[in-house]
Image (cartoon, rainbow, N blue to C red):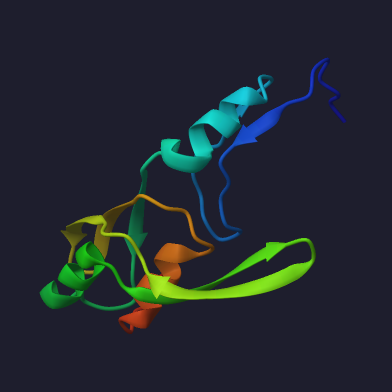
Length: 122
């Protein structure tokens, strides 16, 4: 395998079933400054669902949807049920949308859409 002369750090992460771009840097301060605390950056995703999107569901996504996620720290799972922050949502097709979120909860977009009765297919 390849062994870089310096340690490399990913800037962000993707879920197993998600495709996208991951930046890699040898400066470990960059991921911390971009992803931690108040400096969190908006993340935009192209999403396709299993059926036609309803306008009122798009409004729910824009205003925030209550989802349950799990935070795991020190080998302990902590359940968090709370509304998501408001999102920027634009319908791009009969069953597709572009969504920009301002937090990064585990599988957040999939869970938001599942709460409204949709399954993410891409």
